[in-house]
Image (cartoon, rainbow, N blue to C red):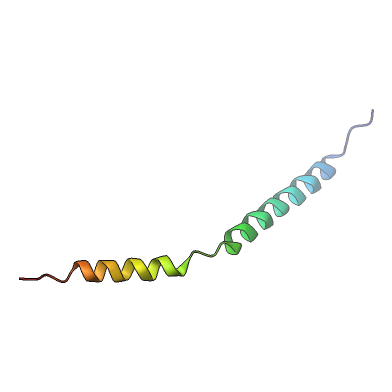
Amino acid sequence: MPQMAPIGWLTLFIMFTLTFMLFCVMNYYSFLPPTSKTSELNQTSSNSLNWKW
């Protein structure tokens, strides 16, 4: 069984690394946080600051 040349292993490692990084970046930027919850959170926090003396 012939062994693979070191340049072949290096090429496979680079391809795997680039694919993995591309997959992680696509997952990171495809996530959209819900904006409605942040607006509700801001309203409740502003309402809690109204003191009734």
